[in-house]
Length: 395
Image 1 (cartoon, rainbow, N blue to C red):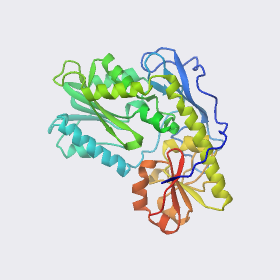
Image 2 (cartoon, one colour):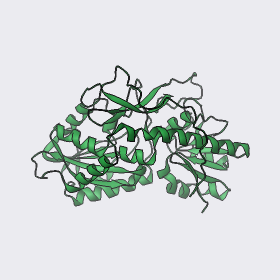
Image 3 (cartoon, rainbow, N blue to C red):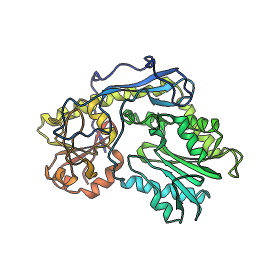
Image 4 (cartoon, rainbow, N blue to C red):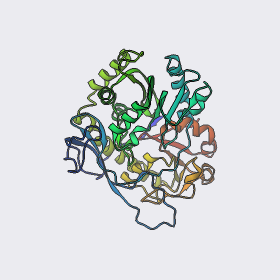
C-alpha cells in the first residue's frame, strides 16, 4: 500500500480535549463524577440511524465525546440519548477467522468442554461463536449457571457497566469461565482510530481497567490472547476467585503492564486521538478534493457504525462519494445519516464503475477484493481508511 495522505491545516471539527465533563455525567462503573474529555467529535447522528430517502430532514444529531474516568481509567461515552436499533451486520471473513482461532485457543486452555453449557452475549455488529461451539457439542442455554459465558463486543453496549458484569458473574457456574472479547483502547490509541467512538458504545476497555473491574466483583483474569482484528482485539478469560483455574496468569499481567506503560490510563496519552482526528479529517478532505477535481467517481464500502462518524466529521457528502455499498441487505435502499449518501448492494456499486472505492472497514480488504474483482478489473482502486487514506496498489 502507498500512503498518499498529505495533511494540511486541521479541519475545524470540534473543541480541544481536556474540557470538563457534562455535569450530569457519572462513571458507568463506580458512579464517580471526575473525568476528562479526551476526544470530541462534535455533533453526530446516531450510529445506528440509516434513514430511508423519504424520511424527513434534517437527521437528528447529538454530542459525541469520550471521557476517561479519573477514578477507574475506564474510557466511556459521555452522554447518549439515542436508542440503538442497528440492523445486524454481516459477519466479515476476518471476524469468522478470528472466532475460529479464539475457540481453538479456548479449547486448548480447557475452557471449552464437550457437553458443557454455554451462554453467549452477542454484539449487534455481528460476531457469534454459536456454530463453532456447537461443533464441539456444547449446549447453548439462555440462563445460568453456565460453564462457559461468551461475550463478543457485547458488554460495551450496556450503560450500567457494573450491573452488566455482575450479571455475567452471577450466571457463571462455580468453576465456569467468562470469555470477553474487546477492541482494546490501547490499540485504538496506537492506531489513531478515533472513529471507533460512536453512540451506543458506552465503554472502551483497556486491559488494566477491565482486569481491575473484574477483580472488584470477585473475578480473576486467568488468560489473555491478542488478535490483529480491528488493529488489536483481545480475548480475556475471567474465573471466580478461588476457582480451580487459579490466580491471575503471567500473560494477563504482562498485557496489563504493557498497556499501563503506554499511558493508557492517562488522559494526556488517550487524548492523542484528538490529534489523529484532525490529521485524518484533513487528509481525507485533501484526498477527496483531489479526486473530484480530477473527475474521478468515488464510492465507499462498508456502511458500518464507524462510517457514520467518519463521514460526518470529514464533512463528506454525495457530491464527493456517490454511494456506499454494504453486504447487509437490511441497509440496501437506505442512506447514510446527515449526508444522505445512498446505501447500495455490492453489485450495484460495481455497476457504477467507480474509479476509487473508500474502504471504511480495513479488515474487509482481502475479502472484498476477492468478492469484487471487477473493481480493479475496470481500472478502479481500493482506498483504505484506517482512518488515514491509503491507496492499495492493484493486483
